[in-house]
Length: 253
Image (cartoon, rainbow, N blue to C red):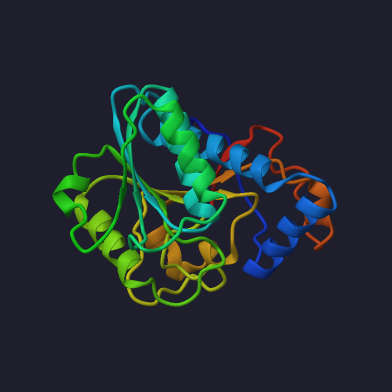
């Protein structure tokens, strides 16, 4: 079970960050599908994508998660919980200074990970964080630092994690969009994750399809996380046939 085994889709529409935010808003408020449900669906799909990147089996394998403060970070922590349940060993590396408070829903996802894991390994990144060679222990790194709402160059802490991950030599699976890549244009400002593969949620963000982003995106996967087709129809995008062959697909650009 590898990436090549996934169903293939072509001519996939993409959305801007503003359009995706509107789709998320409609999903939550018009269709009563809450953030927690969307996040759990996303976490499961990210974990499934990770299993494909790892060749179909995660038991006994090390997975590091780069965890940002927003929803991408929370999705990543949820994915680590599923991977632990399937036999992997994980470490969540949270990009915050010790004085920063955790925000919801990240705090809830970390609580769940800690409670279901026999030996939870959650650390905070600071200037003395893991070296690239420590990342190299990992057979996979999940990049959940920055989501589609991020703009501009990554902050110092995030930039340090990005550099360490890129220098580690380990495969990287980016969550929704590689950190440091602009979701609308595909441009980078400062450092950016160079992913082996990216699993984007709901629909690809426009920047993922840009030629400038190709070297950062790697293989592009698309996951259904339960957003209603009608939520996309409301912004003029038809997604009714995207997932007819599977709910996790490989996008041919």
